[in-house]
Each structure stands twice: as structure tokens, then as C-alpha cells.
Image (tube, rainbow, N blue to C red; front, side, top):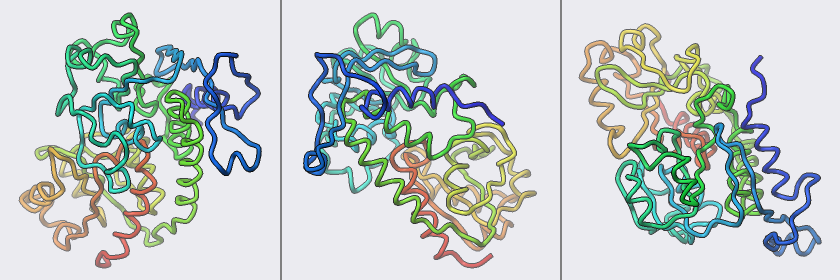
Length: 340
């Protein structure tokens, strides 16, 4: 049985930072964040600083609520917007597609776009950020947005989505919705918006609990990208977590990784009942349909011939605030598919 990850341990520290554990705030900590409901009950959820985290093996100390935030990857941009910190965004980068409707008009939704892909260190530094949030660990490199120690030396904190940690000591194995919710909680502590995080987690838990997964025993391929060789969702990441919650059996669940390459021949041998198509700005679901129909190996599959396709936006396929929505959407789409 996998041992609890360092991420889950870090989430406990975040709960302390939210005032939900036996922790006390420094005298100079920001005032508690409250809502009318909290005030009427006499309860508060305090934003406590400094926040100290072990983030993918890098110690991060956030002394005060960040005021100038840069996000790289849609999952992190949407997280900041969902937690009500969008008015502090000074730049976003590497968008995977449009924002969901519920965030499209949020404060900060029109923040400056720094780059279509990972921005250079020079572009990041021009925004004078005090926090850079990244959806992938690889964002922080000399060829990317800058190395973490170098940015720290300039007084810029860095934070990687815990689900994206590659070191086995930190990577959730497998990723669960408890991990996703702990990540939201931790981000709320870092951003100084703990009540918003608590409220969002409660709302998403309720939505997930209300899901009635498919009972059809259907198998599925999670097709993310690639034409010659498909890049698919494997057995321990967000695709597996989402498919399992929707009642689908992942044909690549036996691969102990978050994502993997799988030959078209292997896909044909496993003959999925349905195919989940990831829709991204650079590789659309429609393009994937063309690839499947044009490849002799897959063109004969019943799922392709009968167009048994489900579509999810790329931003919903990485651990974040859209995972529960993805489960709900997949279950709804399944109800409209022709029976295998």
C-alpha cells in the first residue's frame, strides 16, 4: 500500500494555517477573513502568516499575502480566480483554453497574458511578482520561467501544484479527490484566502457526493495528444481519478504513471467502449476525431465508428478546481451516448 505522501503532510500544515488546527497566529498576522455566516456564528477562518511549506522538495516561506501574482498554466490561473485572488494577478501564461463560464467575469480574468507558452525569466521579472504559481514543475528551469533558487534570491516565491511533483516522495500515488481538495486548501493558505478555499472545498465535496456514476461497466481510453503514438491517461493521475469517479474503467490503468504513451495497436487490442478526447488550444477534440478515423488501426474500432466520444477541456484534466465539474460532465455525456 502506498505510504502517505509529503503532499498530504503539507496539507495538514495548511490546515493549521487556516486556523483549523491547534496553531496560533503571530501578533502581526493579517486580520481574520470572515463572511456574514461566519460572523453570525461567531466563527472565523483566519489568514495566518507566515505560511511555510515543503513544496515538491523546496521550502517556501510566504511572509505576507502575495500582492503581485503570476500564474503559468490554466489550472493555476483558474485556482487563483476561484479563490477570489484574481485582482492580484499581474500576468498569466500558457493558457490551455478559455476560462469556464463561472470564472470568465471574475476579477482578474482579464489579467495580462505574458506568453502563449512558458514565459522567459525576463518576461516574468518585468511584472515584479512576489509569487509565481506553476501547474508543472518543469516551468521552473533556466530555459523556462527561471530556476526556483534564483527567483527566491530575488524575493520571489514559487509554488508548484502539489499534484505535479515528480519526486516519488511528494507525488500523490494515486491522486485522489482528497489530494485535490487539500491542494485547494493549501493554496488558500498561501494566497491568504482561507475562507474561500474552505467554502469551495465544501461545495465541491457536495457536488462529488451527488454524482451517480455510470453502472454500465464501460472501458475508456483517455486520449490527450499525439498522432503517431497517443499520449494517454495512465493509472495514478487525474484522468484515472476522474474516470473512476464517473464509473469508467481506464484501459491504461495498469501503467503506474500519471500519463503514458500507448501504441495504437495496444489501444485496438484493448478496444475501449468509449474514448475521452481532451480538447486543448493546440490539439482539439475535432482533430483527434480525424486522427482516429484516419488511422486504419483505430478506424475499425466500434467506439470510433459509432462516435462514442466524450470531450473534456484540457484545464479540467490536471488536478484543480475543474476536476469535479469534469466528472459531472462526463456522466452527463455518457447518458447521451449510443449503447455499445
